[in-house]
Image (cartoon, rainbow, N blue to C red; front, side):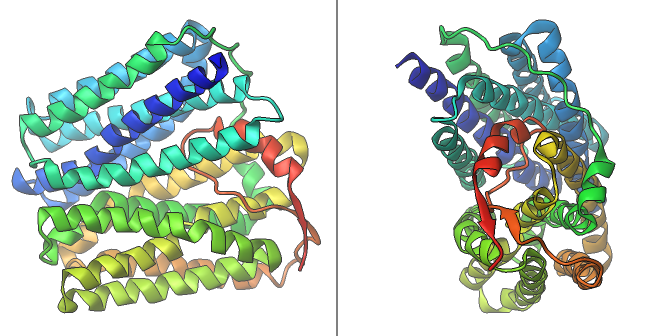
Length: 412
């Protein structure tokens, strides 16, 4: 029972953090427009978030080693809440970029601590169920955060104060639990070249996934406003992207387990290009068509990271899995850091459709590279089973390591 209570506390903190920090991105984009920021400045906010996210992934294990899980969690949460409260005190884009680095630091640091806690407290018998619930909670909270945009008025104290309150509330479940803190895990080495050595295609795939996901999540609200969507419609527009990604996990995973993953990855990139082109055409048909189109775009784009990660793990040794996950996340961050700024600049120069043309270009390059890699070496007959791989922290690799090891699938 105590274990169940401990996990419930962790899951509650996860939901509250997702609601707070994931709603900040679209709110900042819409607030930036209201305050007269340029599109490039709005894109800079998204890039700053992912820079802070990477810093949090790297620093969190070291801070845990110094002060323990609970104090480190409190420090990261306080950092996020302070940055949210400061938004309407200083309405300057450079200052907001620093604040967005703080929110990225917060979500990455807190996710690292939560996942480290879960990994330490689960057993082989409970790990699969615990991980499944955690992933559902994480993605569900991120999707619900997009819907909050419909009730948050951009560029107001009330909107940012509400998100700060929710962020602070994430402290309560962990602060009140009586379960003893786990031991601090051994630090992972960050070896980006490990991913490239195991699978150059997987490394390229996660970088393109970072480019596409970050560009849309951080600049998508700007696109929605440019094509005439209202505030409540932008909320549905952003949530539809996540919903499409959630729906896609099982059927795409089924395909990736039965066929050459490189073919599935290439096919998914082709479908992502087609859905991106459709999103360019659909604004003329009204808001409903736009929202349905972006759900299909999420369905084709969201699973790219998980397929790439599964392909990389097919070539990894057991003892490499945690570090390989960290390396893949590093490459995801590399793709994510620059893409919101680039997307915003392209929208400024060429109009809102430039967002999807940029993402399509990334997928075209990935298809070309994937076809070339298929000529280099054959796929493996025995592979790890596809699992949804979240981009939360470097620690997630430890939590999911046993799941990948227990589940193998033969080549179809």
